[in-house]
Each structure stands twice: as structure tokens, then as C-alpha cells.
Length: 149
Image (cartoon, rainbow, N blue to C red; front, side, top):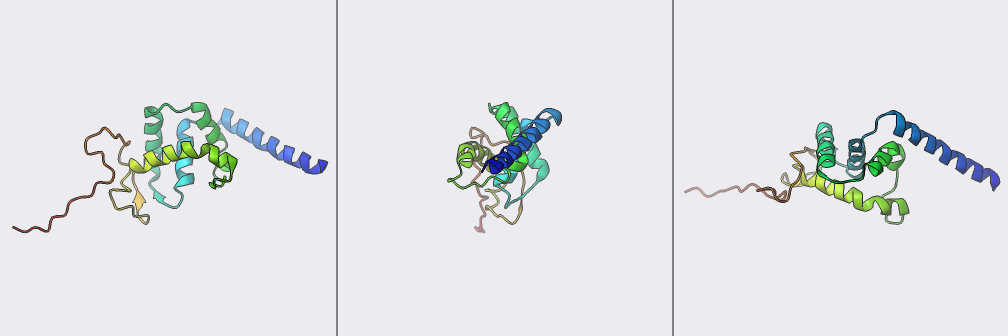
């Protein structure tokens, strides 16, 4: 029993040291965390990497989001990516709201919905979603007229 605790505490310590080294030494940015969140939640889609990075820059610039939380996610990215998304997991339940905000904004900022929600094609970033922008409806479809007059 005591040996098992020592192993667990040792693993937590190693993870903490690794996170501290990543936090302090590599210049992690909030954009790295946004990219990690998008890739974690939308791993089943083919994403345009430069578009994801541009979205992360635009999103961080446009929203008031905690930089400390984002840097923590970026520092713990290898562990964070492996967290199960099930509601039974307490950590996943605690991060779900923020993840869903980011992923929803990303999908609304891409050509995913206007192109028919096709999961087989590459999703491309078109510009940060703004609900007040004219013609900003992501669910719009082009009108195909077969009327020949």
C-alpha cells in the first residue's frame, strides 16, 4: 500500500516537473492551448493547420479568456489530449464548457457548415465568427436556381 502511494506521488511529481519545465522554458502561449483544444475535440476532422493557428490568434485577441488557464492547458497538453471526454470524468466535466465555446466558435468560423458538414473534406478557417456581421450566417446555402426563363 505504501509502495503504491510512493509510485503515484512520484508520477505526479514527474508530471509536475515536466509541466513546470514546459511552462517556464518553452514560451507557451494561449494560442497553443486553443490549438490543442481544437485538435482534441475535432480530431475526427481533417483540419487545415495554418487555419487552426490563425483562428487561435484571432480568438485570443478577440475574447477575454484567462491566459493562466490557457498556459496551463498548453503546459499539460500531452496529458490533456488523453483526458476522456465522458461526463463521468470530473476533470473533463470541468473543462467541457470552455472547450465547447472554443470548438463552437471554430466551427462557425470555418467553411464546415456552409459546405454541408462534410466530414471527409478539409475544414478551412474563413474568419472569426461574428454574429453581428452581415451575411454571417454559417448555415447559409447557395441558392441554385433551375429556373430557365
